[in-house]
Length: 212
Image (cartoon, rainbow, N blue to C red; front, side):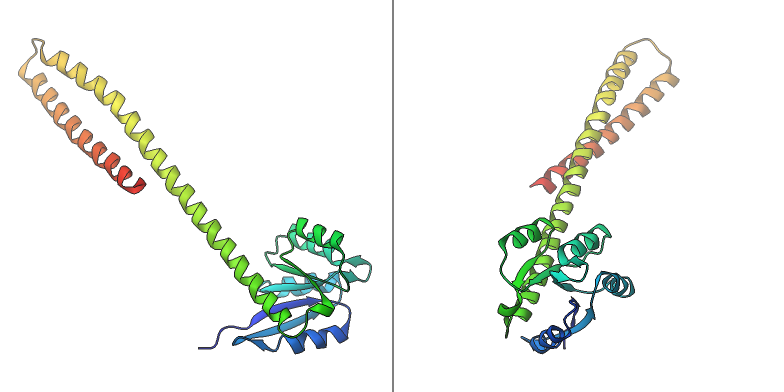
């Protein structure tokens, strides 16, 4: 079964590089790519709003009237959850550092992104992003489980204290000279307290098993 093509938004005002990128992104390891093109910030946001299901954005740094990092920041501010790979014409470690601060997933020099490097980078970024999401899901699940366990402990504690007080009061009353009707009420009360205590023990034991 053929996998779904990787949808890429290339933000670059250089039409020649569009042709180059499409050439390198024909296919790689049985994965195919679909490349859409935007030349500036306005068109980038039009494309994103029209198709928010892009898998990755290839963002050129040098663009008319602005730069790729500024557009990237506004993309993140607008809550578009799409990983960004920044493309530059030359090595500039200041840009690379800024890119990491903005949450850019990868930084590539255009002239070095040849042959299999560009598609390999795209796939590696997507795998890394997927792994991050899985780790976050596991952490969130663990936090939910811990919260439930804490709630169970609190519930058991909150039930046990008043139950103990009721049992003591019931025991004191049972020693008094009271009528048969009231004795029956106390017996029923004690039976219900016993049943409730058993359920609390089951809940507590279940919580211990979950922790183990």
